[in-house]
Length: 297
Image (cartoon, rainbow, N blue to C red; front, side, top):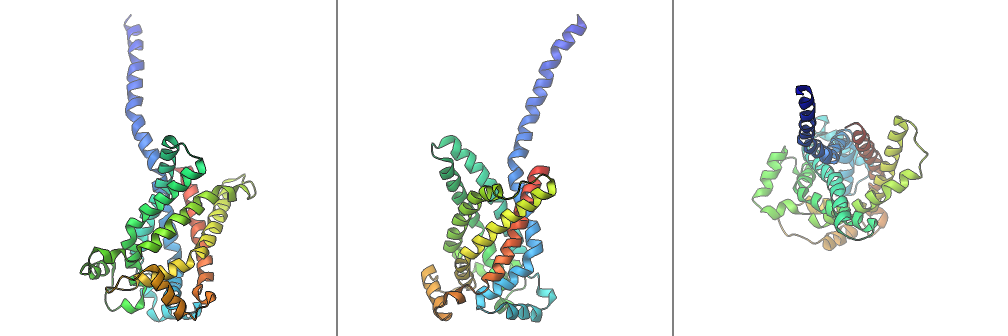
């Protein structure tokens, strides 16, 4: 009888144990997309930062690739990774939000809103992009640190943040409008086209083939979107390179740049070819790393 009673008591103990553990397992699963996005961003920034710096100089000054590289050579290797902390902080945070919030909001909207899946996922993508814009101050400081005209004003991230403080909180959010526009639309295209593009690639049968397909899919999308939104980033960079003074509208700054560059579209896209290749590599790394980590975590 004692043995029988013991066996009868065991199932509730095991059931209770599972109930205690399962919420923790669920929480880890919910955070997976955030963690994978964060790690993918770190990997990307560490590899592509020097290329981004060349591109930045072209966007800001409208110079050729060779001249931008010469500028960096004159600055010296010591300054090559100057300004990497803000993009590292910004990218790891925003990509964690981009992937994580997109998944969470897609599920939430799908459950509570009776609309086509395409619509709910598009709204989720826009909302995720809008949330990313909270970290505009990091992108703002990155712009200042990469501009050699400000090299004598501050030497690190803390000093750059401190220099903006006296101008009020609005100064940290210069360039917010183009960032909101860029983030929202690019997220819609990225998440909307990622699946269909991968479906048209050769069927992957090995882990390495999946990795290559994910790299190609992310790279093609990144390159396309980087080229499409390049003029917006040119205007954003010009707006954010200013400290203090009048807050000029997107339209006014665009018109100024348009006149400076002889009203030629080709001059507005100066540096776009490098941005294309950088985005190809960058988003290929991000997408491949993200998808790989999703499988192993």
